[in-house]
Length: 273
Image (cartoon, rainbow, N blue to C red; front, side):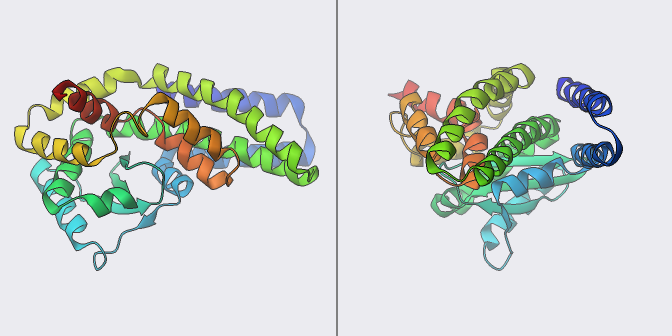
């Protein structure tokens, strides 16, 4: 509800700014862009996130186990069969995207490669459980807002660097955007979703011991907490991404959002130690 209200207020505010500051052809162009944003935010939030991640649809001939696992878990939870995608990123992440009846499961290629058939089924179960419990749609909207903010900001920087084609200026703008944008995106995530989402998800998963045990095996295969998941390591990856492509920076922005992998896997692995 808070995310939907935020999008409504944002669209009204942008419309008022365009009406007050522009006129003629520029006003028409600005309102046309705003209309496109409204249409996407209503009916294509999942598609926008897939675009930002650079995700590709998984064909059944290439990943038969992934397709079989998703179909089995969708039937078990009585939800619509999802479309499957993979992307290339820095972390072993998996996301569920939902817009109305459209459901998509997105996994990093590295995660697909390290999981057995049973572990894939457990991941699909955990993702589709969020659909079953009416959690996925809200998370999709939050990721959409953050992803669009990142994509738009980097696109504006790209335009400026083309106007002033100097390497020093481009690096300065990238660092400035990094320091100005990410704290606000983190604040928005905490305000709109926060840790309560993942605590609720963790409690739901604990109700299914078999799938929970399989998920812990997946967690054991991921990097240990003192490596990529530590705060210092994350900052190093984020800092290094400043000098890489805009597409990579957008992926990093979504990947480094708080994720159930961090709370469910890493914290339990630390407790065992």
